[in-house]
Amino acid sequence: MMKAFLDWKHITFAHPFYFALLLLIPVMIWLQNKRRRNNPVLRVTTTSGLARVAGKGKAAYRPALFVLRIIAMVLLIISLARPQSTNTTTNSDTEGIDMVMAMDVSGSMLAEDFKPNRIEAAKQTAIDFVSKRPTDRIGLVIFSGESFSMCPITIDHNVLKDQLSQIKTGMMVDGTCIGMGMATAVDRLRNSKSKSKVIILMTDGVNNVSVPISPATALEVVKAYKIKVYTIGVGTHGQAPIPVPTPFGTQKQMMPVDIDEPLLKQVATETGGKYFRATNNQSLQAIYDDIDKLEKSNIEVTSYKHYTELFFPFTMLAIICIVLEMLLRYTVFRSIT
Image 1: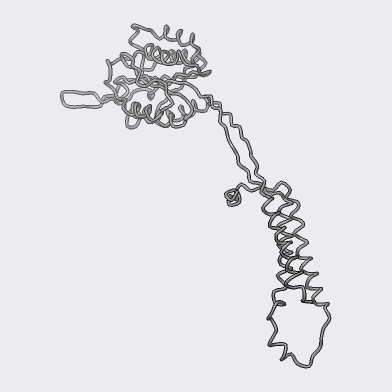
Image 2 (image 1 turned 90 degrees about the vertical axis):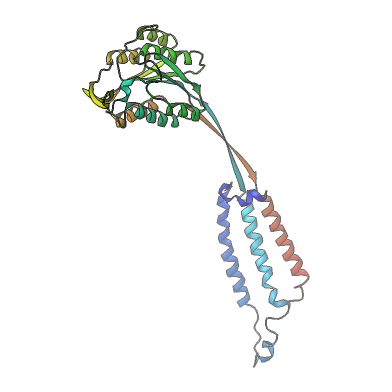
């Protein structure tokens, strides 16, 4: 109860209009002063004798009776207003989305048309995206000449972000097997019970490894499991500088940017997703922001308010003040006129 009184942020009044009665208090004070001025007056030739006793004795404390009456009235008005302590309980019913990020880690991802290069920009953007999806289960698949599941779908995003930070080129045989990347992502989602299942497929090249699963076969599997695929083509238009090892050390060479956009568009269209083209860091970030807006988790919040009545202590204090005033008036101050 004491904690409820101290927590003023959660104090409300059921009938606040009763506070209008506080306007009666100035009227009571005015009537009391008027009554004192209308008391009989005794005229004397000198007050030297009265000065020695003025302010002494029980008479000096008689105004306390009126003060007690005012306090009692204020407390009763507060009681009529019914102070209450409110406590709000919130229950969240969250329906998250299961998704897998399938990322190309082939050698061409070292191209420096992004800063510092494509793969580092992709990693950081993906980490930022994961941070914005606290209610979703997200997994990670990487692919180049083959594919590998780095992280199963999980709600432990710290583990996922740690795996994202460790991605680098050269982890597998070089090449681009888009079909295998999609198939491995589907394998992570096929047992999911979520109503919404999503793959974010990002690549900067053309599928050049069709064994054992071609993109066409992987697409049919994706559609069979009703998984939506957002595809992202990474790379500027024209050519991009790529570091190439030579007998004289690593040198940058301009290489043509070749993305199989027809395939990526087909995959996105037939699965209900969307195709994006990222040509720099800013556009890649904007793409992930768009996907974040398109794939929103359903969160239902139910609030319950609990009220605790606080008028009783005010009523008891008012009664105590009234009883105390009556006792003092008819005992201690009884002989004072």
